[in-house]
Structure formats: structure tokens, C-alpha cells
Image 1 (cartoon, rainbow, N blue to C red):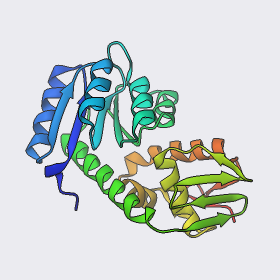
Image 2: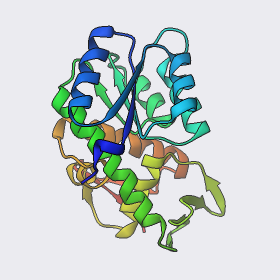
Image 3: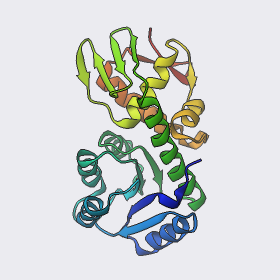
Image 4: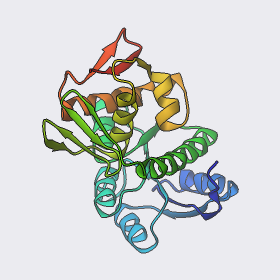
Length: 228
């Protein structure tokens, strides 16, 4: 279990009511919470103090959440939970594409938000443990360097986000085996909720764009498998 006492959470939210509620709940969990209300302020705070997790609103004054996420990931990769009032699939895909690991639609449950922050931190810990393994996994034309967290397709490097890499690695552990969406949620994101399977689908679509449409296949509409 991740100990939150040493963990810093940067909350970027311009709605003062939501920001205050999120700060109060995360602080009650023992996190060191900093709140800012705009994109430029978020980047300044991130550069000055860093963060172990960022809770980031999609719509912000000035720089929007997508650009803030992109710049943060370029400076130093960090787990990002994006909050959005937008239901458009394209907005979700763009958010995941710039490095967001997970998203929640407003209005949301504070209990669920806390659970997802914990899950993101556990993912970072697991990734650090796995990174010490000097392993290369080859499946078809795909080569996965687990120590360096790099992926190559026919010798050319594919630029994957942290979540895309973790998802691909999980599928590559047993090529051809079907992983149901709920199981992938539990293994990669650390929770299993049927309503959140859309997140898995969106990351799989991103993998297909980057690796080729035939690398990951959908099986009976319930899960995914990496093609041998």
C-alpha cells in the first residue's frame, strides 16, 4: 500500500468549490496538497515543487488542461488524473494522447477520486519495481524493452505514453491470451469498475494507431489480446 504521507498532489482546478472539496478530502487522506486555479500557475508550481500525482481539470483559463499536461510530461513524466465536463470521445482521446493516465467526468465521487489517486501511485511503484528487470519481450514485429521502457515496431521506435506502455507489456506477457477489460483495469489502473472500461478502450485505440491495427485484437467484444 502506498503511504500518502510523503506524497504530493497538485490539484489544478479553477472552480473554487470543487478545488476546496478535493483539497479537503485528499488532505484528510494524509496527502500534501497544493491547489492552483490556472494553467500557467500549474506549470510554475510543478517546476518549483514537483508532484507525485496531478489532478488536472480539462478546461482552464489561459492554457487549457491538455497543453498543461503535455508540457508537464515533456518536463518530467508524472501520473495525471484528468477531470472533464466534456463528454466528447475526441476530447478524451486527445487527453490520453498527451499523457493523461486516467480521467473522471464531473460530477464525480470524492471516494472514487481518492481511490484513483492511490491507484496511480501504486502503478508508479510497480513500474519502478519492474524497471529493474533487464528483459526484452518480442511478439511478432513488436519488441518491448522493459528496463528502458521503450517499444520498437520493425526496428522503429514507437512513442508510447506510460499507460500505453504498461498496457502493452501486460498483453505481451501472454500473447494470444484474452484479457477482459475489467481485468486490465484491475491490473493496470488498480481498480475494476464496469463504468470505467471506456478508458481501456481509448488506450487500446491509441496503441493500434501507433503499433498498427493488427497488433491488438478485440475478442468477442469483451477483451483484448496481443497477436502472436
